[in-house]
Image (cartoon, rainbow, N blue to C red; front, side, top):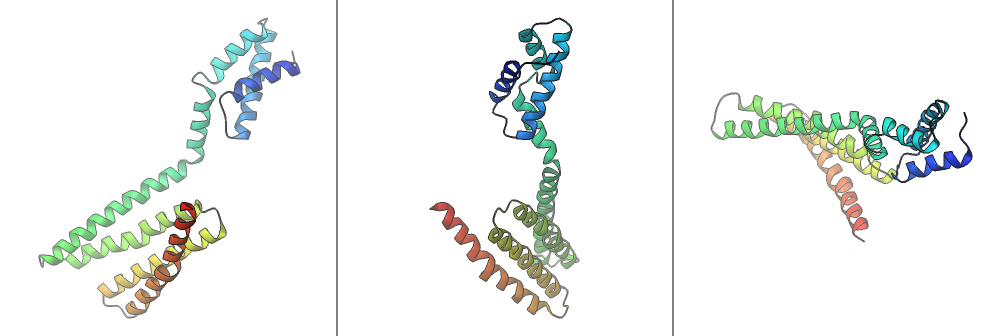
Length: 198
C-alpha cells in the first residue's frame, strides 16, 4: 500500500515539529517512517495507529535525540581531537611547571623535564588547538590568521627549545615566531573581536 500525499504531509508535519536542522536526516526519517507505516497499514492497521507505532519504533525518545546522536557521530573525531588537545595541554603545562620548579631548586634533569613540557606544548598541543580553530574558521581571512598563529607558535616554541638546548639559530626562530604572533595574529584577533562586538 502506498501512502497518499496527505498522509505523507502528516508524516512531514510530525517530523517538522521536532525542528530537525539537518535536511538529509529529516528526509531519511520521513522515508523510514513512511516505509514502517506502509508495512503496518498492509497488516490492517489504520494510518493513525500505524503512524503512532512507527514513531515509537523509529524515534521513541523524539526525533531531536536522533539528530543529537547523528551530530555526535559526525563530530566524534573532533571530540576525540579536543580531548587529546586538552590532555596534551595539561601534560605539557605540568611538565613545564615541574621543570621550572626543579630549575629553581637546582635539581638535576630539570632541563630535560622542562624540554619535554615545552616540546609537547609546541608540537602537540598548539598545532591541535590551532587546527581546531582553523577548522571552525568561516572566512579566508580567519583561516589565514589562524594559520599565522599556528606557524608563529610552532616557530617560537622551536626557538625556545633550541635556546634551551643551545642549538644555533634559536634567536632567529624566536624573532620570526614572535613577529608572526605580534604583527599578524594579534592584530587579526583584536580586529575580529572588535567586529563581533559591534
